[in-house]
Image (cartoon, rainbow, N blue to C red; front, side, top):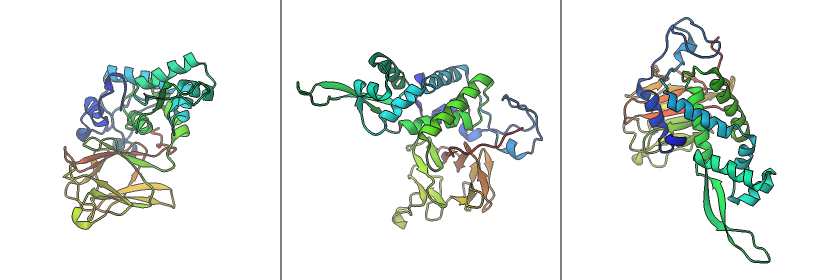
Length: 307
């Protein structure tokens, strides 16, 4: 994630600043500071999926600045314009029908949050030849970083006491997903050497496990983690499995008898028992530094209301 002073922080580091991701706690019978929230039966399913992390004022201020940048339809047009190939300011200005000066201001703000970069290139040939120009392009993984950032704040159910900020976050995420949303759900790896890696869920049955050199090439329908995630079971005897139910369109995860266990929003799953996933659910494949933490992102899927 890249936001102002968080520019060099990993997604996992952000979670650690908000609260240790391996010690997330459930609120049971406590009032959650959210629009229209209320105290509910402490054993409801919604409570089991509610994560509340401590968030300091600086993080929320930076989130507000981040949303300011992404709430502009003009800036989203710029991201679409340079999504496939680098372009100079004049090309971008013509594509979005905005003045050169305003286009430059918009690009500066997008660079500030770390999703756009500029590099020297050559202009289009003219009668006078070519000249060096600055060309702007998306930072590799920039769109995924935005999806991850918005998903972490919105769907991990951080305690946003500012209702206006919470509403802005929901609005920006909905708009961004509409413009750049993935055709299928995905899980994003948080922390470790592969922090930020995106695994689209393109199959109905997907195994999760650590690479197994002795077993040869893993199947396409597998989420294969590197050796550094040592607490995760080898993929040849998968640690966990994600399955799509066509009858409901829902996605479910189950533990396959692993030693380290599989956890959803801090709650350990029973072996072989499927648990339905919801947009923003935090999945831990074993605990500790050698485990793997994933966030489930399902654009367009509405999380059930708590009221």
